[in-house]
Length: 254
Image (tube, rainbow, N blue to C red; front, side, top):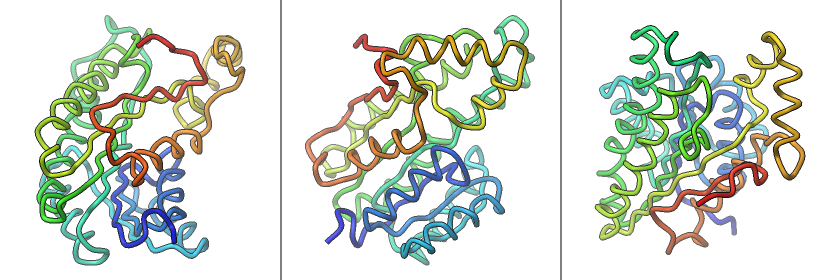
């Protein structure tokens, strides 16, 4: 028997990268997975990969910054796969740029996706989880929230907000046997890193970043998916309000 048999998981930003790896891992663990992304074509790619591996999945296109769209996505998941027992807030977006050069429109977009989005998703699934008498909420933050990161001031603020929000929510919903935890990836080989790689001095930046990681490699999406799988599993039933860095040892401070 797989660890998540009979559970329904909703993974945001699951059309590619870390989200895709998480969706595939939870499906491999036995969960039915709702794959949510703003890009419907991308969700269908992930859905097909899950189906090819013998899993059950549903594609949903939605902007997580729109609470009504999130509520509709949760309802669609409930109707097709069952009530949401596992939520993974993975969707995020960033643009690396010094804060003094940020236009206010950039702040708004960063907050819309990285802070309001996960808050919307958490509220939309809480009634299902309370009805089930249990639940797992796992949010993907960033080590930028823990130690800061040049060129990511507002992004880091949003991700830091998710850590504080998650710890508070963990206290509020513990009586319902719902756990709330956070995974903070370090530098991970995704499309965002590809943007850095393609920019001026990209190869030098990536090389310096890699040399700064004690394990001497960039993270891979599957590394993050493994941490999420743990928090979603019965093994983590007594773990809540925690923040786990998945960074190859880059940030070891508490």
